[in-house]
Image (cartoon, rainbow, N blue to C red; front, side, top):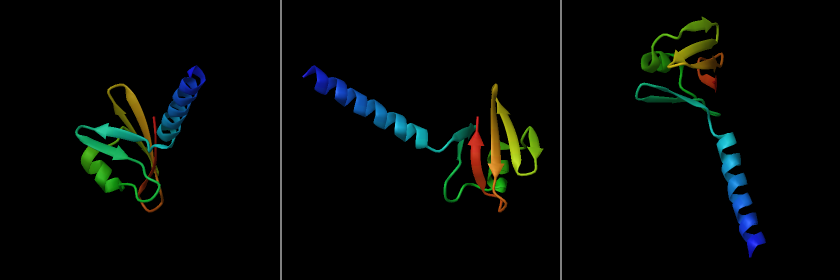
Length: 86
């Protein structure tokens, strides 16, 4: 019985870890949640409208700083959000 319990807990923990590791990265701009996406991420205009001007811009890379947190947004050539790194 003890081995079954430990195995069940291990499986539940591993499933939770794998699902959180594959989840899209996000950042919050006030009441708006910005998420990167594998398919169609939000565009530069939408992010500017919701988050305002970034602290820095380097071509297709924007940097936002909110409350001590730094977010680096990378855009595709078509202007869609490709990735958010914290």
